[in-house]
Image (tube, rainbow, N blue to C red; front, side):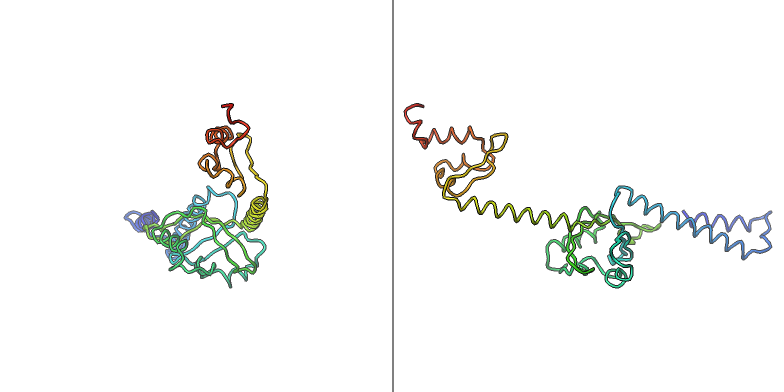
Length: 239
């Protein structure tokens, strides 16, 4: 520990048989510089170890009250804007979230208070102007005495990914609505002959064999159930 090394150096400089240097104050300043450098190196090494598992993203750090103290790597946001709108604020303040009543944020806050690692937590914020979506991961860090000092981690801007997923979801919804509005029966089976999509006409026609007309059922299972129920008129008398 740094404290032990400092005590040893002080003891060495004044122990019997070794006269203190002529410029004792300068020597003490040198010791302080060495110890301070060691502390900085330890902190830097801890930061590196904390982030070794994360290869991409924006580096962030919060203090013991979960307020941002550092954000780096966001190239399209001026440092002045980061200082003005982010530093000194909590994540829920940046997101405009109600940490006391929103279950998602309440759970996140409880996990932070318990010093649990953060794994792929996603949230929305317009703190830098315009709607952005973020995914963050991080872990708590402690000082040499084991006192909690905050969190550090990485954040990824997933705005494009989120918008693409939202557009795909909207397209799927429109497709389902269009298929559902068809008066004709419609059913889609995948390469493994499993039912993946159907419309209301299919559901109504197969109401008597509803269990064999659900997503995931095989074509063979569906046809066999239809035959057993006598729903295939051409097959009557040929079973």
